[in-house]
Image 1 (cartoon, rainbow, N blue to C red):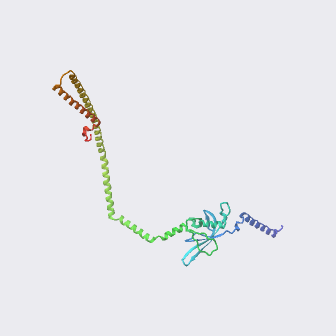
Image 2: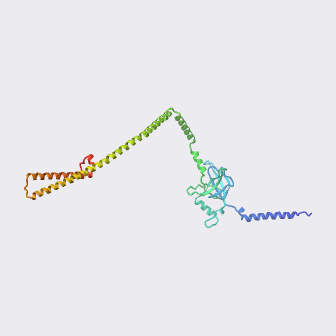
Image 3: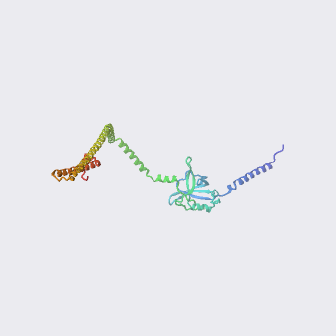
Length: 322
């Protein structure tokens, strides 16, 4: 058998490596060899959970990654800042016309209020990421730096704000006050005065229930009596209306009859006078009597008219203005 030539094997291996390299360059379009611009960010507080390679997102879209994390200590103020370097892939951001973002375009976004903030990537693993977003109402906090990288302003995270609030709380004083309050509640709850007060309240409630029960029991007969009185009043008023109507009708009829008699007597007297009979005491008295009867008939008619308009006057009498 012929031995395989080592030269041929070497050529084959080199060709395979060249094909792989060409494929990487062609498929990646040179992305693996493009150097993205680096930005620096200074965070206050704790960066626990942030590591090299952590995501940098803009509105939830990955635009870069963290490349380095360090500390900067200021002896004068005894403060520590977290220095974070991150590479931003400007190719993931485009302008209104679809053009790729440039450094000038990105720095313009920073001037418009773009800031960085540490946020949890997942609460389960407590991993942090750098979130880029617009915070136009927040003050721009820039740190003097000797680094040659452009700086992205930062804002405190929600966790950092909560930590500051907790740090400013007088926890010792709150614990003492809470302990005293619990002791006072326990002391009052076990005091004889409170027990006696609760018993007194219970007795008052029992008396109130008894009073309510008595009212419910007596309400039925009372309502029945009231209803009976109302029915009697209605019957009395109906009887009064009927009797008053009969009385008024009788008075009206009597007035008409009296008036007719007067008219008849006047006609008789007038016939006597026309017959030539002179005036005598009898005729004079007859005239006087007829006038009085006529006045009585008028009064009776007036009374009948008034009672027809005000039948209640039979009970309460005539008012002064009537």
